[in-house]
Image (cartoon, rainbow, N blue to C red):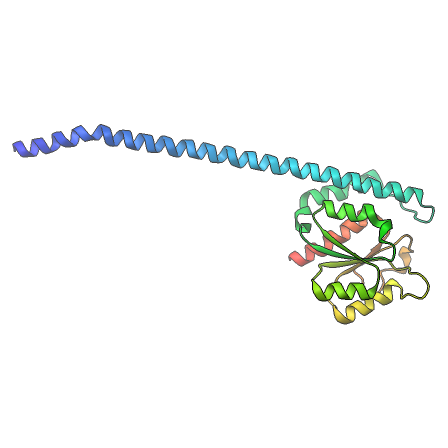
Length: 217
């Protein structure tokens, strides 16, 4: 009986120590949980701030495109404030799907597309510029591209953009293509083989988002 009492006395002596360990461990778990939550919130806030900063760069590049267009008597476009706000909202909600995607941009005058190219680069797109069908085929043989952006009008003696697209589709039939041109008649519709055609930067961004959205399905 005495030995039994001694056993319980020893148990009673160590209970405070066990309780202290359990309390300390619980406090540690609580502190770690609070720290994790704060870290997560901090990271999310930074991502949101970075996203807004990137969007402001996109907006500035977008405005630069419109400024250049306004100076060109042969490029007649009108993008309302509502249209601009709409595409920026769509980019803010879906722009992450564009990050890392590769665009092949075919134009005999890539120097006139500096603002458009910068606009796409701010969105995380990798833009490769080429000036001929031969160059385009060479790049496509080396690396895959998610989509093609092309002009239509070409200097005398060169195939126009529609004929060039047919040539590219003979080798890469699944390559989505957008024609980005100075002027066009919407009543003529979309050229055969193309996903869309436009002379407006906001519509160009919508078309790119449409293509990438379908690829994500």
